[in-house]
Image 1: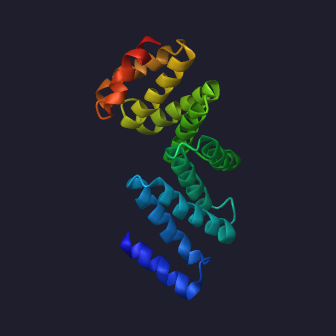
Image 2: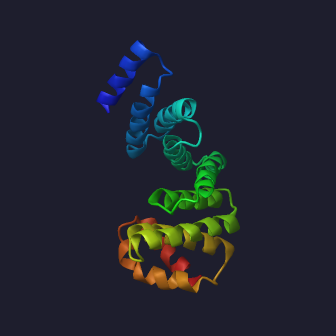
Image 3: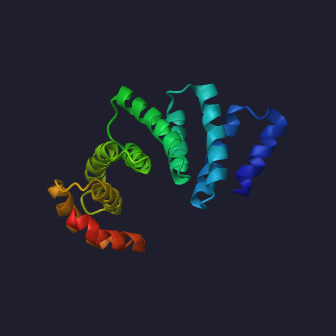
Length: 198
């Protein structure tokens, strides 16, 4: 990270704060801060990168889309659910406009949107996006992947909140992911009986 920060300082001195060359290092520093769970710092750097990409490449560019998704994830980590939903919507609207194939990023966006909506107690909408995330994850990663298990946990939590029990395929897929759930924290295991009974 030190190299990126030095690069940013050199660019500020020689090119000014609003040069395109500053976008990539800001984005990289934002990713590093996110991995360190320093979400406020991650948001600052990632937002700066997004502003620069929008200014120089336009809102629909691939760089902007990647940044938009990253900002949405950081906002979700900060529990800024309304702002997170807005960023996920921007990202997904571009995906729908392009009619792109579902990618890992799209699956992440569906999952994040579901989590943010759940945080706003919009459980019906959350379930819709979590189901999309589940379908995308199963298609991309197979039924027995950690990514599928993580979506199932969130879907189970939403179902438990709403008292829904019509999700028979959910239980079938959950059973094939019990081993993968051991990779998640103990919170999952406290929630598991509730999810299975729904």
